[in-house]
Amino acid sequence: VSREKCIQTLKGHSDLVRSVSWSPDGKYLASGSDDKTVIIWDANSGQRLRSLEGLSDFVESVCWSHDGKYLASNAEDGTVIIWDANSGQRIKTLEGHSDFVLSVCWSPDGKYLASGAWDSNVIIWDAKSGQILKTLKGHSHEVYSVCWSPDGRYLASGSADEIIVIWDAKSGLCIKTLHGHSKNVTSVSWSRDGKYLASGSEDKTIIIWELN
Image (cartoon, rainbow, N blue to C red; front, side):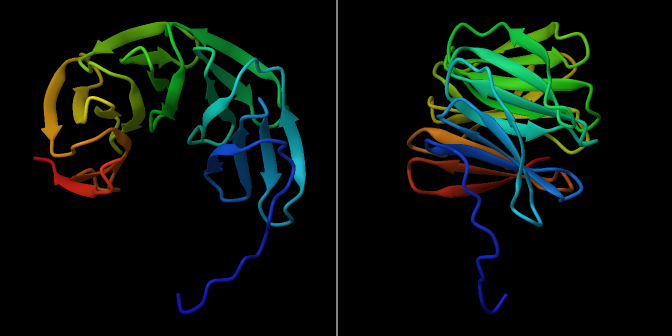
């Protein structure tokens, strides 16, 4: 890319925006804000299509399901919300964390959700029933970011304890811990082939890990 060009500026939130997420088909954007709303936008026109309201606290993270039918959002009141992306209706409210939820992520097959929270736990949910399947305990401080591997077999979580944990999603067991950051790990992301993991930290570094 030789020259950057701003093609849309989307205005509609009344407070800071904490998270944005593209729909799988690239036609829509979702945004979560401190104004306690999630907005779905037409990415081409920049028009606000619908505003998802009724939340009681800041929206830290939004994530589309891989089929584009649903949105998940989390908030500082300890809940995870599943929305119908087409109608904007709230389908389920998932309660299980004891403190602020900071990150949420759909499994590649859309059957499960993972969430990380200030209570230092990662929870795996059945997206259809809303039931807790596993509570993963291994971090000693808040979990800022969770991410599924592309094949859905593993979860990565990054935490204020400065480590990344790789979990077996089926058993819930910790299979590996990655040490290298000197401050909070705020973001984790798998490569498309699942061979590598990237992590970002408040120590001002990004580490790319090779996973065997």
